[in-house]
Amino acid sequence: MRSPVHLKLDLAVYGVRLGEELAKERIFSAPASARDFASRDVELILPEDIVARCPVGTRSASKSPYLLRNVDDQFVIEDDSGERTPVGVVPPPRFYNEATTAGTPMWQVGTVHAGYLSIDPATTCGFAAKGAACQFCTMQNDTSATGAAPRTVEEVLEVVRAAFDEGAAEFVYFNTGYFDSDDGGFAFLQPYVEAIKKHFDTLVALQIHPPKDNQWIDRTYAAGVDALSYAIEIHDPVALAKFCRGRSEFIGRQRYYDALEHAATIFPSGTVWSDLIVGLESLESTKEGISALTDMGVLPILSLFRPLDETELREHAPPAPESVAPVYAHLYQAVRDARINVQFMRDLGYAITPIEARFFAGEDAKLDVAVSSFYRSKIGSRAVRGLSKLRRRLRVKTVSDSFDSSRL
Ligand code: SF4
Image 1: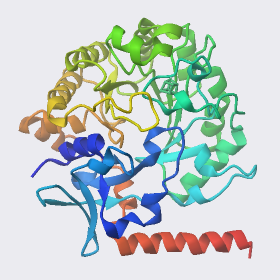
Image 2: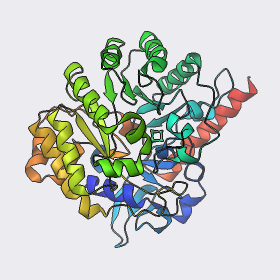
Image 3: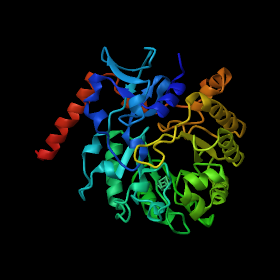
Image 4: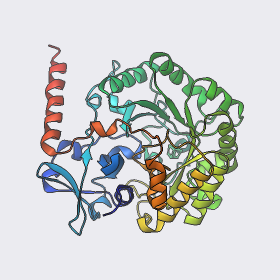
């Protein structure tokens, strides 16, 4: 039997088809959409509480060897040999059906992934305005968002409160695009961070582009940000210039590494990370990128390239799962050798975290983690194991929503 992380890798690359009994279910046919590419996925809990996000309903997912079915009222993933793995399905949170006081649907302000609430208060990316959006990003065609008004602090607080009250998220993650300013966008985000720190006892993570001056990184830490990412995405400079022209031309590759190196000297171990996409450069180059990051105490997070229908790279083949396994083994070893704390980044549906990469690094590595003190998240408890329970959960929401809207 495949390990749950090998299955997670396969599901990230191939996506999942839906059994007939599931195809008409609302949660699978109309997932919340936002610019975050993960929002069109279904979130599954695999054995050993591994969180996996799987594309569903995309062109490539319609050819997936994996089928999500409801068998004897138990969700299973069935592969083409007929082998079944029991899974849980995480239903969309209730607050997706609500609107802020200003009338904005809450799912447009924040979306939940693997227990964190992802928010982009800017709603746009400066690279798109310059015609230099990353080729794998849906932002390249999203002209509607360009120039849109940012979310207000009040709206963001309302959505955080709704997500926390429901127990749908445990911490907040700001993920913004490019700002044409020396601070990399932190000055824009600072009021949101400070408001959340004032009103909630929670962790705040930030993914932004690096500032021109490292003093902004000191200010980011001083403002109470708990974890920080400057995502380089691609280590090879030629591939970076090709796929991420904005990063290469308007910021420059070296700025990412310089900023990450500085941040790792200020923030606690394991709370500075950078994403690398597997499948847009040679695997050797990705390995070099991993080593470059771990050498400076930065945690690499590896997501897998996958072709989205509405991007320039829709025909670009995703990597074969078996070919990328050595990269994940290298990730585990590099992080372990550098003694970087892996507890903060333990569950990310869209990427295999270093702690999950142990499954690619042999039996000894699995034992390593089994005896460590890492704690489980609460995400598993939100998963539903069968269709009748899922329908009941959604029906309860629907009844409750109509009751709310009737204002009785
Ligand atoms: S930086 Fe690239 S990936 Fe991020 S929002 Fe802008 S275009 Fe998309």
